[in-house]
Amino acid sequence: MKKLIALLTGILLLFSACEKNDNDTADRAEKEWTKFIQKHLIGEWKPNGIEVKPLLGAVVLQKDYADLQPPGTQDILILKQDYTGQFNTFLQQGQLKSIHFKWYHKLEELGVILDDKREFKTILLRKSSEELRVSIPLQAVIADLVAFIPELEEIDATERGLLFVHFNFVK
Image 1 (cartoon, rainbow, N blue to C red):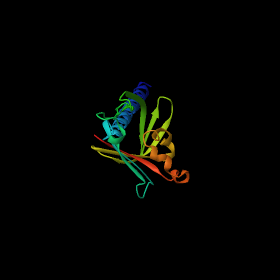
Image 2: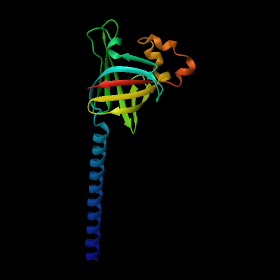
Image 3: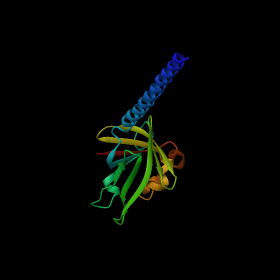
Image 4: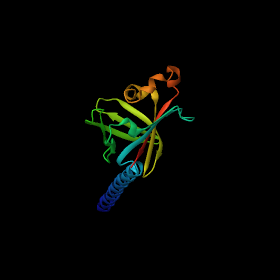
C-alpha cells in the first residue's frame, strides 16, 4: 500500500511539473509571438504622404503630408508595446491635439480603436524598421479627411467605393 501511495505521489508530482513547464512554455511562446508581431511597429512614426488610389492601380490623388500641416509642425504617430498609441497632430491654428487609441495587429491587418469606440481596420502593405504603409477604404475615412483634402469631394461617389487611402509613415 505504501508503495502504491509513493508511486501515485511520484506520478502526480511528475504531471504537475510537466503542467508547470507547459505553462511556462506557453507564456514564453506568447511573449515571443508578441515580440515578433510588434517588430518594426513600436516607435514614433512621421506621416510623409497620402495617396488615393485603387488597391492595385494608378494614383488618383497624391499629397505630400507636409503640405497638409501648419508650417513648422510635425504630426507623430506613436505605437507603444502595450498596444496603446497616440497620434499627435497640429490643427490648422497650430494647436496640438493628441488622439489616444488602442491598436492591434492580425496577419496583414493593423487596426486602431479610438476612445470614442470607432474602429479603423487598415491593410498593412509594408512594415520595416524605417517605413510603414497602410491602406484603408476611402469610404471609411473620407468624412475625416475632406477638411484637409477638399479635392476628395470631387471624386465621383460611385468611384469612392473602389478607392483606398494609402498612408505612408517613416521613422
